[in-house]
Length: 268
Length: 303
Image (tube, rainbow over all chains, first blue to last red; front, top):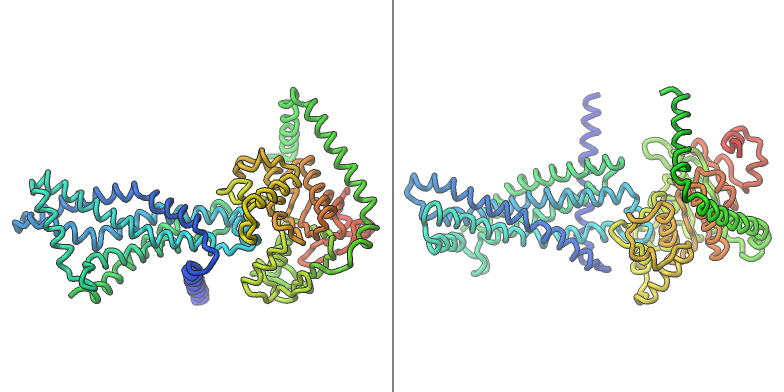
């Protein structure tokens, strides 16, 4: 009896996973197939990218400041507060920038995607698209995925920058370090971990490949749960919650494995 | 709550709106009676000319054939369901709620695939088509959804223009012309509604825009899911009239799913009664009223 139930749950799990990857495969494949829904893409880029700018600026700035405050205490014990720029730049660009931007966008955009596609599902608009001869994946999922793949890295760069700027504020006004010194150590850090193709700093490769993956995760999870919605408005709520939880966990877990791989490949 | 209380509450509710509307009553009553009379005349005219013209004017050709379809999800939904529609006919599928009526429409659209049996549209077996070919077959059909299913991020104009933009390369002015034509056909004033969003429309208007969108591509087949549910009697009559107008003026073949037996009798060439997962009856409305099958008699009730 218990074994049977476990068996059923396992089967369902594998089936969902398969569905998810089929959706991902189709959504990404359709990027290269006509017709292109360019206006949908720009609309989504605006909603996902420009729309998330405010929260990304806020979280980035405050994280940078708090990071500077905490590390100032630690570095002071070694008398190394001059190197605070290195520490902030390293952790923002490699780790905190991508993950924080990813989590914020998952909360804001992932839930929005799931709610919108979910309500379209329960009001039969998805069926209507199918009936009118449009593949809903092509019309709805592909623009959202592509927009996220483009915009989450852009948001991350902005997040990194305001984070480092936040560190600058603390370094100058709390520790009394001149800005010139701060930014000098920031660039030292960014150029210290080696280059790919002789001119791209490895930190940038790490810092930009992560948000690219996170963007894909957020949009695909949102679309997957949105399209799978059933059971009226209650179903829409469930889809939204699941999206935020699943996307956030996936971001943190995938981040670990991605870091392992990237460090192995790009660390000299 | 006891039955007695419940009944009194319902009566109270029913009385309420008429009291409130007393000032506007005369004009509205006059308007609605005029519309009702016009519809009645149209329907009677239609009933008179229908039988002869239909069989003579058009070649008898099966446009839709559902053959021995069996479908089950967790338990059987449809068993051994068969019916056909010839060109220009209107088939109304009636039955109690939850008997899988809407499922039949999804089978015709190939949103669902039958476990056994086959669905034939225009002589082509659509059961085993690829996804892309199924999209092409769907272009022959216009579907009107129960809740209209208008895209709520688009204006009425964009909604009706949607199928044209998707499947044709018409220039913008021709698209606009077509949208205006379809909106006028469903008795909406294009200039008034075109820029409105679906959320700003009433239930009846949404249905009509839904019909206009279904018509935009000039389909051979129209499918309606509960076209009159949730509408007041007058709007129900107008929608019924619209479906008849489509049949008569454009000669489209229609399948209507409905539990509104009254409007079903008005528009049906044939009625299919779905009961216990099977087609319990398939024939003309006259044959249905003449039947002495106990279930049919019970289903028809006082009609």
